[in-house]
Amino acid sequence: MPALYDCSDPASLLDGIRAARTAIAAGRSIVIPTDTVYGIAADAFSHEAVAGLLAAKGRDRGFPPPVLVADRHMAAALAERVPAELEPLLDAHWPGPLTVILRAQPSLTWDLGDTGGTVAIRVPDHPIAIGLLRETGPLAVSSANLHGMPAPTEAAAAAEMLGDRVALVLDAGAVGGSAAPGEQNGSTILDCSTDGVARIVRQGVLPRATIAAAIGELLASG
Image (cartoon, rainbow, N blue to C red; front, top):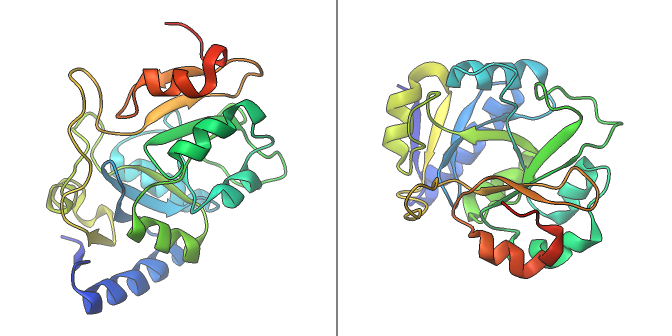
């Protein structure tokens, strides 16, 4: 089993963040809390680290992971452009349970998988995740479960599923909340990679009506 750090204890949290930084720098995967579910995280700019993350989940390059960032400035460095029409939505829900797919900055030297030149970006609303991201920079992060299994909201469940595929687990207690029937506990994913239209490609905890109220006709029907 991976090392588990109790983030409710200040000394354990400090040790955990230090160990997390070391593991990320070494190209290892770790488990971190977010506002929705626990995530498996790795250095977004290391091909080997991202490949290890996908292997740990039992996924291939056809499932490129989203990238978590600490703030809007970090997000802007990864995207070719953030449409101005999205600003009201991002103002309200970053940090929060919203992942936005944008055209990736072409100058970046990374390999997240078969992305088609896009990147899925989110600013998570969790202090431990934000604190770590400020130290490590952008992290490739996907839900901390084996492919086809439920996304965990408890650290112990993530540790049990992933085992030694990850270096460590930062345990912040239960995270997330109850999703609506038929919806996922994870963030809502909004594809904004095509000019003039936004499409929900995964309905998560952020309701469609909330998105529609912020961006209006930009949101495609259906």
